[in-house]
Image 1 (cartoon, each protein chain N blue to C red):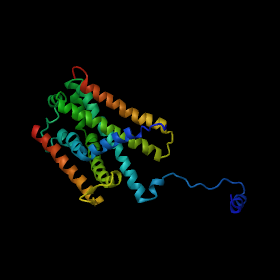
Image 2 (cartoon, chains in turn yellow, orange):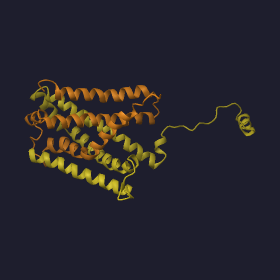
Image 3 (cartoon, rainbow over the protein chains, first blue to last red):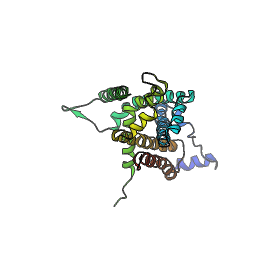
Image 4 (cartoon, rainbow over the protein chains, first blue to last red):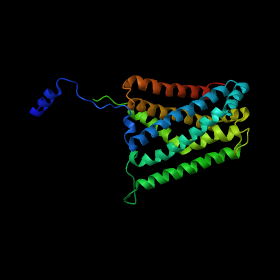
Length: 142
Length: 119
């Protein structure tokens, strides 16, 4: 400890040193806000999975129970939830492939590094194709 | 020898669930939450009891739901555990136990509902 350290302590007069609060830390920087928005999508992901699981449970209880669940899906509250969930999932898709260049190992093709923009574009394109394929399959068999 | 971390297991489940949600999540929410219940772009009987029973009695349907529901839960559990830590909840063991516990219970419930005899 240097002399300046002990001087500082004497000047502080034994009072507790100021410690910057961590409350609301994530609101301090747009980068932190984006990080929190990305993490918060998990709440809707969990809620949606639980809605599906509950439907599966009601299905196991017979037609009357299942129809009750289906009827609940037609309520305005359910519609509002699923519209919000849809927006959240689209944001999840967008953010997932935006951070993918940072979370995956560096990729080389033909001796050159694949650019982060190319990885993001490929991921988003794959998501669009997969969503259309899933919807197409359901549309065909429904 | 260093104690092995269990983090890779949870991170893999988080990653798999995140990838699945990113690739097909928007389509699933649109189909089950909007299009089928309200008859938008899809017939109103898309998710009728008969159709869903046939879907869950089919092996492809079983495998699909067995992947979707648990992986979304594990993905969300990992993120919620980290989010609680970010908001200053530092009881790491308790947070992980609750978050991963819910995902585990959801996984067991899904498996039971799809694989139990007579289901």
